[in-house]
Image 1 (cartoon, rainbow, N blue to C red):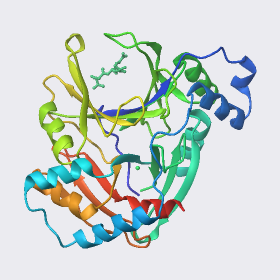
Image 2 (image 1 turned 45 degrees about the vertical axis):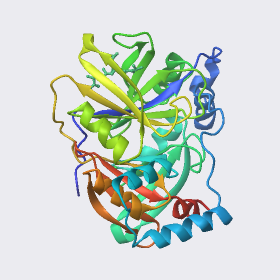
Image 3 (image 1 turned 90 degrees about the vertical axis):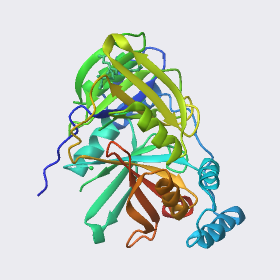
Image 4 (image 1 turned 180 degrees about the vertical axis):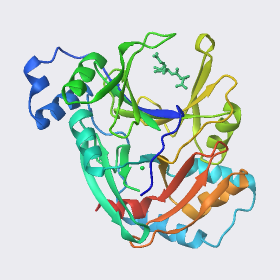
Length: 341
Ligand SMILES: C[C@@H](O)C(=O)SC[C@H](NC(=O)CC[C@H](N)C(=O)O)C(=O)NCC(=O)O
């Protein structure tokens, strides 16, 4: 049996919360379903983030051009980068390896108010995935617990009430609600059964409560350049906090009010992190995994799984690692939509 080792303070996830009416106390000690409903109301799950991908004429066109592109190469690096900017990309899910999938599902549904969206067995590669989130996978960013599975940020309307609900459900609170050091935003930290850290962030109602995945990096400019060039992301904003000696860069495929984003954190003077073996990767949708792998190589990035279909389910993927060793997997949009049918 493999022991999971968490990254030593190398990242976390987040859930956003917004200002909300006072919750009736009876809700705090009620059933799991009512608890989940209360959390969903705190988290103000307010609609969808992205246009769902539907199979149809447009999809067939994408498929035809993707198939034709398998053997093709770009005429120039400019053409390659231009293609990746226009590609149909979105953060799909973040994958964590977990020790006990049932325990994880119980925590994310009862304590964080997520829904179990689906389970997927890949016996050929000896693992099972459970997909959990605040909305359907064709529009929302979700968490994938994998039995073979850093942390995320979650937004909520009231951090204090969200934390109260989590505590009432037996969740572990590691940082009490209060203003972030060096700022005004109210935050709290909770941990899942495997020790993954979740930051609960106070925010106005958001279509995507699972709002950020934080990764610590040893050279911020190098990391920004990688996620821009190799992954086609945009630098949404950068914030330096000299008092607490760190700088963050928000990277993504659209505004952070509407989409889940990657929060790259640079701690002054820290160039390397112990990553453990627990955090797996983020998944990103693309119209063409073959072209994606080519763009990554042209950007000087490393492809660690050649583009091609996954055994058993035939979803085409390609995996890459960033200059700090964090992995991302690009997933074919049409194959992904078929998985959800
Ligand atoms: C709202 C937004 O600004 C935050 O929540 S930042 C949270 C803050 N982050 C860091 O300190 C990052 C650097 C840190 N050394 C790390 O590597 O995690 C944070 O965690 N603050 C802690 C607190 O108690 O306020």
